[in-house]
Length: 177
Image (cartoon, rainbow, N blue to C red):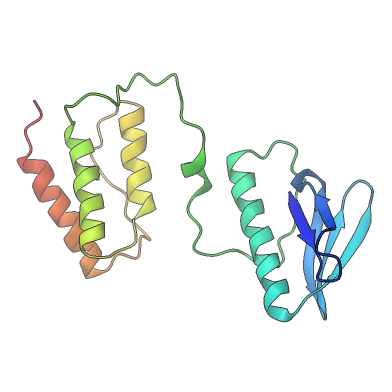
């Protein structure tokens, strides 16, 4: 939910659960939050920077919660579309029914690929290609053979390709035990 205090009374907080948020938006002198039940409008004064930051955070948290556990969240029209957030599916609780033994000291080639790729990302100071890792994780978790990678619309740079090539090189020379 949202917990907000004011400069006038910093020890007094307004709390609104995300399940009760109907809308939020920036106003001329701050921002407003509309609740679902009871239907009311909470107005807060803030400078442009604070109010736009709060609106951006609310949108980001809402998108995150919607992707992880929509539960009883009301459908909300977002005033802004958050950018640069990781895929919320990455934060799902792990499937405990998986048979994959994570304590095994032997790596599959795909696990070696992931490890090598992540080292390349650090080495070349790149952003992780989430689309690539989600495909690898799905194959590992479901014990599938990953024959192809879909990297369309990944916006890969030459340095990204270099990290990927390094990972492939290490992977293909690796002999699982």
